[in-house]
Image 1 (cartoon, rainbow, N blue to C red):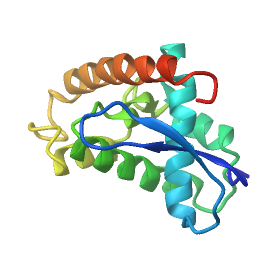
Image 2 (image 1 turned 135 degrees about the vertical axis):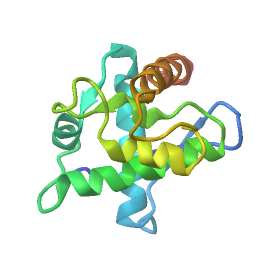
Image 3 (image 1 turned 180 degrees about the vertical axis):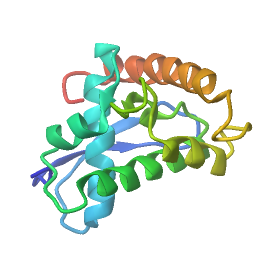
Amino acid sequence: MFLTNKLILLTMTDKETPSIALDSSNEIGMANELVLCVRTHLCRIVGQGTPITYQALAKALELAPPNTIHKLTVALERLIEEDAAADRPLISALVISKARDGLPAPGFFECAWRFGRLVDDPFGPMVPEFYAAEYDKAVEFWGAFTKDAGPEV
């Protein structure tokens, strides 16, 4: 399972580059722990330069049914909220649906719109263009962070 005794926590404030700290406490709720695991895994793979599907991410994190994709979606939406609040590129842009021709699920766009990152209609024709730009920004930002963070990320 994705739960571990020691997690790599990404501590981020405002527009600063994230810093890393280890946390071995059991006080983190399961939902928050999943958010941290998702961000950590995405930071590890961002250098590959290709998106990961929801299913592949769930498998990599060893999420168990029921509601695996729903749990993952909730965590990804939380990451969108955190990144939007801190004015960082959306790390959730690294995750796509295998059924949507290289785009994330509609919930990604709705959430990006809800938190002010997407100003157009979340179901409109500008969605692919928004996604391509957000993906490129995420790869650049989070890829640079991963290089600077060293081997723990």
